[in-house]
Length: 361
Image (tube, rainbow, N blue to C red; front, side, top):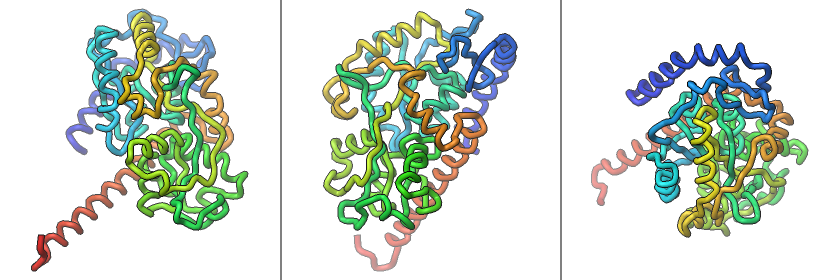
């Protein structure tokens, strides 16, 4: 275990030690919590954690910590969100910092442990964040006419023989991660009706992210991949891949994109300030280009706008519970370990080739 891992584990343990008695007290006072973890209550039945009943439990951090959904290169979004981080610092009067995360599980745990105050969660993991970490979604990226939505798009290489879903039988298909709505749960809900059952009709390979799935199809590591259409189109717009390299052979009905959520136990006046800062902000041109042409944060609620996501979860019997989260977190960790081992092996082979006698530079 690394020093960093030990440090994060110690922080989490300390947080739980301090807050466990408070959580137990709240549990005994709660008349309804629905699907929420025992640490939270939902007496107004809006499906998200209520603020603490005891004002002494409200948090007012001197520094706000923000994280956005994980990608292969965490520095990518840190750079894209820099103008917003600077604005949020000015708007709230509190220093705001970007916290890079490498997995959906790490992001959810960071908010649960109190180390993360505001976050942009991917569509599927939003429900885990709500149920297990007390996240309260309040916005989605969008434009003047409404918030951004995406479709599940099944991509293949344009030079491949695959033109319909049945062509993928027996092939290597990349799903992003087990907790992902567009990259795993929605395909498992929709594909059987198209005559294609994941893990039965084709081999599922977890790539670890939408960008990794796209790049894997691009390089030929995967025959196909269901990905979030907004991520795919942004990668094309940024020049990371060429659109003509791919063919989309199927698309779903629309889903909301990443939610932006605050921790449930922030001071109410701070929550209102954060939300207003989000709603008033207009993306600068570079940020607008990087984030799919969106120029603002549009109000949204988990109760109304995440109903299609909850429908998919019910369809595939994938409840957003602690037990399910722990299983998916292990899968994410195992997939990341395999990718790390593959990178290290590739580097080892490259070093051996460079050290071969008589090799010219």
